[in-house]
Length: 352
Image 1 (cartoon, rainbow, N blue to C red):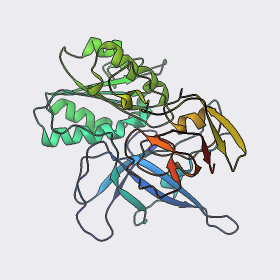
Image 2: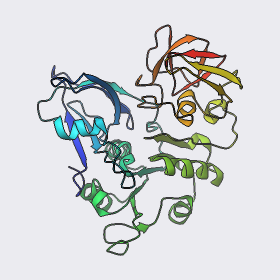
Image 3: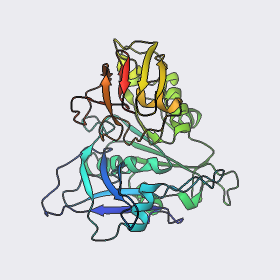
């Protein structure tokens, strides 16, 4: 357990064959295929879920840190997260798990020595731990600023190790931000700043000069902070981000159509027919991809990485053509499409 609330647990995974693991890029994730249920009278339920690696690449094991997803306080009747509950309640030493190799386009630029700013909100700290650990091991002179936002001390994961690194490494600058309005201690005891991680805080605490920004966190943080970085004047090439939930991150106009989430040739006012649910929707090109479009219309779709790597949102493509902002890592077969990185090039009929 990595926090005092006992809600964030690290799992160390060793290969069954005992062979050395291939290196991965700090910031990438693992994709798990989980089988839930199976007791008498309960049908098997297959889930695909992605979890960021929370440690620098190691030849002997992977580490993921998973937070138990409890129902929100305002919605106590919402069920707890099935995947996180499975890990916390059923995965034990000796459990066998089906895992795809590390993947993902959100990872540290290891060829650069430009000062790096790592910003993690909540469980978004996990890829930052991987990046931070890699930098400390392989780029001992690279300046690192870590901004970590949580509500209070009970949710503060990796507290002791982060404080030890900050005390021992002169070029590592730690900024812990608590958002709880009823904090028992003033800044400087367990945390450094009260409130939210925003551009104003960055302006006050970062030195002048170029930085590479890596941001991962919940929807509200992503939708406010990432565009604010661009508005501050940070070049889009220096802004890297990954949300761990639905997020529509709108950046200012840029030369790259991919960064804007607008694909050349993607048309507007197209009919999208959903065969299984017997619905007909109109694509108006306002959403960055089909997954966000479905979510905005209340269509339930399973999703995982939201970057074209895990295949959770793969959907039968019965008619039409889908364009992609980049070649998906997940290997599609004819008659399939990925919603999270796809946009329609023509009217579609989907088996959803």
